Structure formats: structure tokens, C-alpha cells
Amino acid sequence: MKIIFIISFVVFSFVLYSQTPFNLEFSLPKIDPDDHITRLWIDDVDQNGEEEIWVSYVLYTQFPYNNYQLLWRLVSYDLSGNILSEYTEELTEPTQDEYCSFKHCNLYKINDVIYLAAIYEESAECIYSKCLLKISNFETHEVIDSTYVFIKNLQNDFFYFAICYQKLALSPETNCLYIGIREKLEHSLYNVDIETKIFKYEFDNGSLTYLETIQEGGAFLAEYGLNENNFISIDYKYKEIDDGRYVTIKNYYIYLITKDIPTSIELIDTYHECDEFDVISKNDRHHSNYGLLIYHNHYDGYCDRNLTCYSPDFSEILWENNLNTDLRYFYKSSCLSLNSWNNYVIFFLRGYYSPSQYFYHFQIRDRINGYLITTQESNIAPNEICRRKNGDVLFFVYQDEEINAYSFNEDIISWLIEPQDDYNLMSYPNPFNASTTISFEIAEDIIGCPEIIIYNLKGQRVTKLSDIVIPIFPFGKGSAVWNGLDSNNHPVGSGIYLYSLVIDGEQKVVNKCLLIK
Image: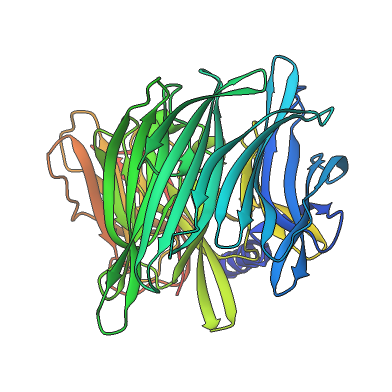
């Protein structure tokens, strides 16, 4: 029996660890290998029930010392990688003092018409910089309306200025178009002033009517699954820290913005002195269940990487968690469904073999409590993550001549996903090396203390955990720590172990954990 167990475990481990986390599904060919990707998203723009992949590109040329844009194009693909349509627009030929560049675009279908909204920056050296919003009929290419959203006169301005970010967001409930702009005034290498504005337009059959300017409300607009009356905006300000080597960090602000006219703004929270900050719960379809999840890395002379989860109405913080990782940079993230459960997020972290060599790991966590499901080395570093209407998530990697689309291999993780039971029995971390905390919840009246019993895969009892902490007995959450020892305090070997919750002498639920040494 022992030989059979060892062989079974070796075969299982080989199958488990020989599989790659992400599988290549298809590739999207570029029109021109020199095209530079500016944005990729998935949407059923024509609302025919078939989603398309949309990619915007720009093509650069050298003139004479800087890169200028020759053209931009918008290409749609089916979900097998075949090109469905291509729209190309040549830009005004740049001169030494003037140029026009494409910044951002989006597509909207209203009353059976597909509208293309595009933003451009028109600049004249040391004189002005203009933000142009243009609305076109996407099928006929006819320009319906255009307006200069923002004009900055630089003639008497000593400081460098750039429109460094624009984001379009259309509110279908009120037919309003929002354009977020960051105005950067750079005083020195380590001291940067930022002003943000959101320009709001009524969008009526392609025609634009200016409504209002929202001051200091951030410029990074996203809905993140909020209700039809609000959306979230993120803003940041630079802050200089002099710890002997001048470190420029940022203070981040989260705003809740209503879609009323006039707009009202509520500051939800502020994160001071952050090295990194991002919303993890992107591609969210279940904000009303799990709330908004934030990643923030604070600078205190060392890196302190944390997750914070807000309730759906932002009235409280549901949980906070430290990542406990040495990996340096947060990369990409998305909400994720596994085994038909929708309460997970996946995110990528980047580390270094050397200054020029990167490696990537990914983590999957439970949005309900922040528990780590798994952390593994990744075989890809996605440039974009998109979620389809059916919940499937695609991970896109940009290559020189194509874009590769990957899916997540659930086989390597499905056995670790904790079943949703009445006792919410789970272990963290899992897999583990030295120890793991086994937790559960009790919502019924019990007589005696609960027990956690550990078994090996042969069904042999390894140990019993009696030192269980329940803050409010007999109800509430309980937990116990297993340090990988058997009942004789001898270390057990690597492998899969079963842990069982026993209440009043009755086994209630069983789960699995993986010990790796």
C-alpha cells in the first residue's frame, strides 16, 4: 500500500506541476509589425450577441529627433483571432513646431448607430496644447461633431506641460460623455504639481453639448461594477521625500462621483506615501456582493504591500491583508471565476533575477476574506486582461508581430478551491511549508468543543488539533494551526493531507491542503 501511495503521489505531483498555468488559445495578427498597441478590450459593439476583440494602434516615425505619429488604426477580431474590420486614419504631417497625436478612443452604439469617440492632442512647440474630442459615425466615417475640450496656452508658461492621460467613459443612463484629463506642471525633477479635471458633455445622437467641468475629481474613470448612479475616479499627487536619496512617491485619492447634473463628488479614502496603488477588482461583475479591492504599497523606507477591501457602499473596510511577498512590483489583475464560484481575484507580481531579467508570479485570493488560494510562478506576463460576458477571462501578451491570447488552466488549481460549505472550512496558506491555519465558522449551538483531525491520503489519522481558538463560544469563527507534525510531534512528509471538522463527534466537512518541503 505504501508503494502504491508513493507512486500515486509522484504521478499526481508530476501531472500537477508539469502543466503550465496559462494555455495559448489564439493569436491576433498585426496589420503592420511596427504598429504600437495603445489599448485592447472586448465588447459586443454592434450588440449582435457576438463579442469582438478591439485593438487600437499607432504607427510612429522619427522626426527629426522625436517619435511622431503617422497614423492610428482600430482593428476588430473575432474570438479565434481573425480580422473582422480595420479603420485607419492618417494624422496631420508633423512639422518642427506642430504635431497631432492620437490618445484614446471608444465605441458606443446608440439608437442603431455606432459612434467612434476619439481624443487627440494638438501641440505647437512652446505655444499651446489642445485636447480635441471628435465624434464620427464608425460605419460611414462621417465626422458628426468635434470640440476642443481643453486648451493650454504655453507662451508665457515656463513649466513643461503635457496632457498625459485621457479616459473616455459613457454613462448610458444619462447619455453623458466624461473625459478625464491630468494637467502636469513640472517644476523640478522631484517636485511635480498635478491638476485633474473631468469634462462632462451631453451626448445626443453624436452631438456634443458642454455641461460642466468637475475640478479635482481625478482623471482615471472606471465603474468597477458600481450601481447605475455612481462611478469611481482615482487621482494622485506627487510627494517628495528626502531620506538622503530623494524619493518621489504619491498620495492617492479615491472618489465616488455621481452621474447627476450637476455632479457631486465624495472622497472615499486617501492613501499617503504610496509607491504603488491600483484597483485589483477589475472586470468586476459582482461589486454588490464583494465590494472594491485595492492594492497599495506604502513607502516607509521599506515596502509594505497590502490589500484593502471596501464594502459595496464604501461605508466600512471589510478586511485588510498583507501580501507577505518579496516580489517588487504589482503588475496586472482581474476578477476571476473558478469552479463556477465568482469570488476570486488573480493578480501578477514582478521580481528580478537581475536588473535586466524579470520573472513573474501570480496569486489567486478569495474576495470574501482575502485568503490566499495559491501563488505560483507564471509562464506569461499579460499586458492586458479582459473578461467576456460569460465570465471567461483572457490574458493578452503583446508580441512584435502579433498578440497572443491565453486562458487560465483551472486544472492546476481546481483541487485547491475550497468548497462553499456551511462551515466555510479552509486553510491558509495553501500550499504551505512550515504551518497552515485552518479556519471555520459555526452558526449553530454546539455542546462540546470542535476538533480538527488531519488524515493522509490513505485515510490514516495523522493528528488531532484540539488547541482551537473560538473568540465567542459556541458561535463565531474558529481556527487552529497545524505545523506539519503528527501526533508524536514528528514532521510528516510532503504531500496532500485531508483535514476534517468534527463537531459533537460528527464529521461535518473535509478539505485538502498541500504540504511542500
